[in-house]
Length: 198
Image 1 (cartoon, rainbow, N blue to C red):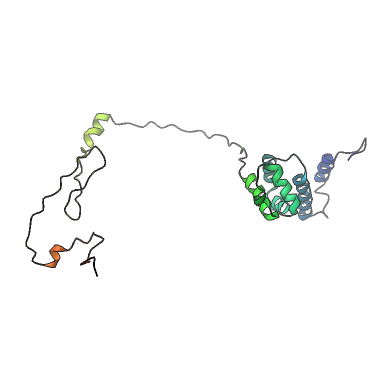
Image 2 (cartoon, rainbow, N blue to C red; image 1 turned 180 degrees about the vertical axis):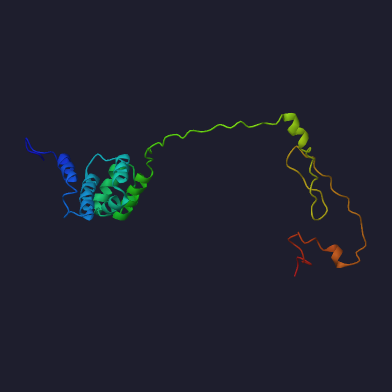
């Protein structure tokens, strides 16, 4: 509060910051503590939005902002979370740490506009392009892929319309001379099983 003819609070802070070089007794730690007190006052004041708190966090840095946010009491943290998100369920902000985590999530979701860097001059280079007829002559024509055969010798079915379904191979009867001819190939999940019954 200022009296008539007095200095406003922001002007008093600017004056103190202007005297920073002459105030050697005030260390950087003390300036950070003063900034932290102002940040805590802003956290407790009404009318804050996630965007305004994100701007404050970017201005003072996480080293000052997060300790002040974590130092809020249960009631203060829950009240701040409710101010920023009026539809938050009670169980999400039931403790102080949960409310602080919810506030941090809301602030993290805000995308601050970044300072746009000046565009650099881009040099354009002339690139020679080949004629389409030349490139078609250079690439070999694609040959249709042969359908893969099943490990058991049966043709595979295709679910697409571009390749015709392979016809099943005819099985010729061979005399069963050894076990190696009757066992399926190694790709089968039943390789090595003699019988399903025990």
